[in-house]
Image (cartoon, rainbow, N blue to C red; front, side, top):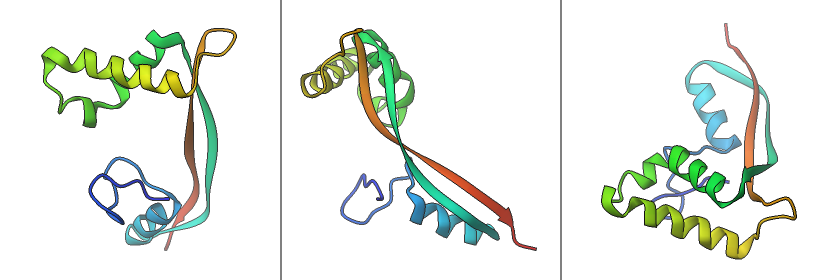
Length: 108
């Protein structure tokens, strides 16, 4: 599934799915032998851990928010996420992710 930033069918320059990577690898004269989208449970140490992850990995999005209110924006995202997926019994925040695993070789 391609994640879109600007309209249906527009590929985000930040995330690729297996189909996007396959097209890219062919353009780079590579042959993808296997493309697997692996579900992953990202776990963070409470709300502060979740906010730290957002602050350091969502830069393409958070840098567009003015410095003076960026911390409030990040706090709002983490709060909204925790409303939908509360901390577990050990105080960890969980985020469902997908990791793209690729096995490829260069075409000679």
